[in-house]
Image (cartoon, rainbow, N blue to C red; front, side):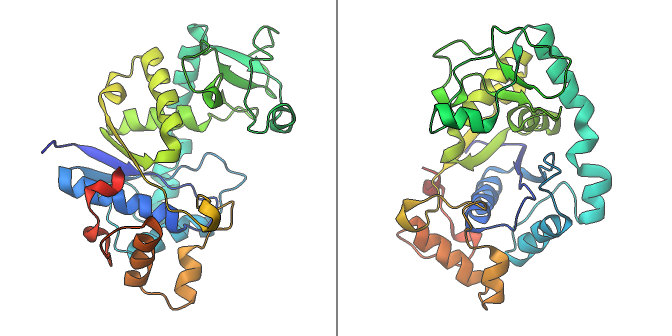
Length: 278
């Protein structure tokens, strides 16, 4: 059986953790223990406008309640804030952005999200600003990748690596963190397949061979009614709410298994089988 060194769970503290989040963490725990990997807790907190302390605290509380393990990373809020917040790795992200700029791989874009949605229902960007020569020095512009047409799925064409406020975007920060921490097993939902492709594209440009050699598992997603993907923004049921309704750990795992349509019952993450990743 293939062995790995390290995987990670990477919640974003922009809301209370929901069933979809913890199912992904449960899959990560199962695969890590089966393949000998240590589990890193990495809290993705660059979007400071949406981050709240109560959401960070909820991460620790929910992981403990569901007996979801992690071996490395913060153990509490103070540990997270003083040592492990992404703000402490900002220099690494800036180095990567500078390298992309030196390679001529990025351009400045003034288009807003709302304007893109008016042009296309999925907000697909067609490269409107790539020949405008807008300054990369100025805030107020996104930095987008000059991706050759057809290299990535349409939703990832010219993807953003630095946001208008100067903060590194998810695709770049997640990649840099995985390389920095030596992650060689990435477990994520099937909805992030296109993100994996974008990050591999970045890794090739930046010479991040360790990420290119990493294994990525993309697991099935839990579905709400009408086959809708669970998410914080869609108001999916949070673990916190389920607990206020008297749900125990075993009830929550059983609900996950039912929503996934598993042929076998689960009452703990240890009951999951690897085929649930397919």
